[in-house]
Image (cartoon, rainbow, N blue to C red; front, side, top):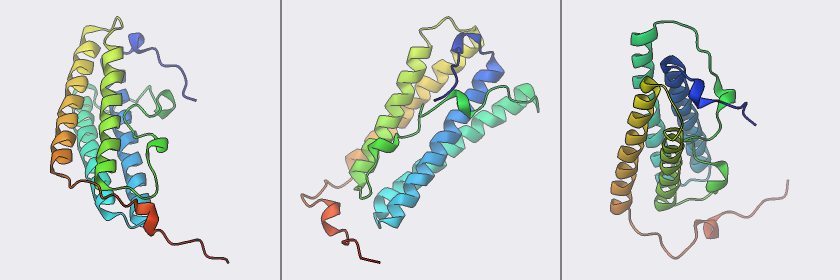
Length: 173
């Protein structure tokens, strides 16, 4: 369970660090999911999760660049213990065998979850620089949702057969 984070006490540096950590957590989770999909030979889902990992990494790098410009090498005061699954897909949303459409829906749920996080945070009395950053981050989540929706529109429909139907039976050791 993460430590309690009081968003109203964040300054801009802490808010940027939190946003960077959120992106890193999401990137790492997408890479984990990619590995699981590859293990189960669901390559389309694996490729999409890898694409999402790269997108999260790029957004995190952009935030890190902004942080470095504003605050140099000032040590971080927030850490990963202060967040959990803000934008990262929940483990419970993934199954061993996933179609591309299912992977896209997992990503959409994660992007909506992040939008809700920043939207709820914006209801708090935040400092003006933190408010501005969170507004930008919330808007970025809408851009990500639009991207996932475009990919969903292009994705072929799922077949009636479940990918689990093609899984190998366990073998006795």
